[in-house]
Length: 481
Ligand SMILES: O=c1nc[nH]c2c1ncn2[C@H]1C[C@H](O)[C@@H](COP(=O)(O)OP(=O)(O)OP(=O)(O)O)O1
Ligand SMILES: [Mg+2]
Image (cartoon, rainbow, N blue to C red):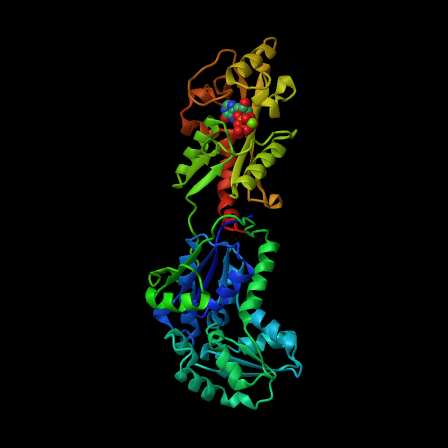
């Protein structure tokens, strides 16, 4: 289950035809739509510029934490799908492949027509996609540049629209095709007029519904659908142009009760992939001492740490494993699932050589359940009472596991250790747990005599974190998967 929204982008209102399908097929999903009406139409623009504009739209939606992107615009799909798909960590769906697939399913005489913007026709994206599937299919493409302005000016039911559709489609009427792809998401709004001109024998393909079917498949495949059927869903609309104009068309087309469009400023956004910086990391620990150490280590990167103390309503995960890694995985996976967020867990403990590695994974419960540091330390001392100072060698170990919700196979796992020995009389007031008894090898200080920074510089947790630092951002940026 994943409540993050699905993002839709288009040059204008055309993508709403895809959005409308999504409302029908995926009613439980939260959704955000962005139309770049200020810079419409995209059709006549050079492909490189369409790619830049697309990145700006994508970056706007990434800030809203979308889990999947739909490029509900054929021109942008033709120009930018491959590059956007290859760089984004979330699934990306365009409209050309689903539209082509749908058309291939219905054609009988293997002669398809495509009407689209100049940009899409110039890219030859439909013909290429179709021929990859079936080289024997004939594809006749026609640019219909006048359609988009008619729709965007809310004239799509007017006599002007009728005349433009008739004139534009004249060359296709007797071309011999039996199926016509509406290769621009604006065109379904002209569907009755197009059908009328082409005649009832021609099947019109609106790639929107096929596109949404593909979205639905991907949500299941990546296990990121929103199964929550109770809450009201997010329906946010943004336009770079006039919100009033957008609302008129959207209201009319989508028939939503209350529809508010907001203006989006995207012109200054970067034209390359901008990773959204991580601002908060959840560490699945109830141990305030650990939480403090993680907070200090992440603070250097400007990241705030939340611990389980911030989420008291969660169900406790039992540490039933026999190794540090097992327990760290149990905690990370268990809390990530409940929080639907990536979660970092630490399972750590003291291993004393003279005690055969005890207390080890049982360090927290050494003195029995209801564990408390004083009782654990007292037990440690009594167990070691017969052991001479030079034989009291020990190490602290930690295994850190970073987990994504419902994807235990992608867990990121690192370890860290620090060597030392157990002293007979506790020293120092800093740190927590067994720190006052653990003298670090090569120093004359216990961990409790060190400042937080000094401890992190040598500790098992600090050592593990230094490894994690190399890995976690890349891993984390794929978290919607
Ligand atoms: O740097 C350390 N300095 C002193 N003692 C330490 C340290 N690191 C772990 N320890 C001890 C505390 C606890 O007795 C056990 C960990 O048990 P462990 O289950 O991983 O943690 P925990 O139950 O205290 O909190 P939680 O499971 O919620 O993260 O080892
Ligand atoms: Mg524990």
